[in-house]
Image (cartoon, rainbow, N blue to C red):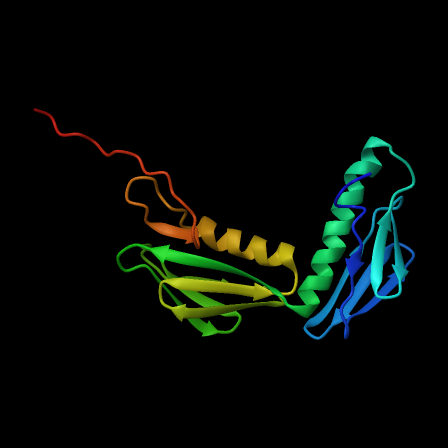
Length: 180
């Protein structure tokens, strides 16, 4: 049995879970999320808990068991608390500016500013010009938007300039040595 898959998902008060045929819909104070569940995996509601079950110990079913449980749990956490990814910007003249909660202007050393529009359900916060917070209820979408922003100017290995996740360590390389 999958250690992750067999753990029950507790549904807090104020969260409504609807299980129909091939999908799960979770509605909470922050919004609504829907995901289709693989055909062989079943999600059962037992009062204020959810259980994810598989039909047998086939390799594919074992793989999907824990994955489905994690995805449904992330939906429940997302509609109650939400998710956030913090990015930091390092470099002289590199900065971020929020034009709106869903629009961002980045100055990253290019000859032009980079404008980033957030997909539906994602908001940006810029508490300091060198720090950026991506927020939303869908964990997968928050991570993807943060990765897309990071990919605009990845941290380079010589001076460490660029956009990185908060607390990310960048392996630095030694520069050129002068001739004697």
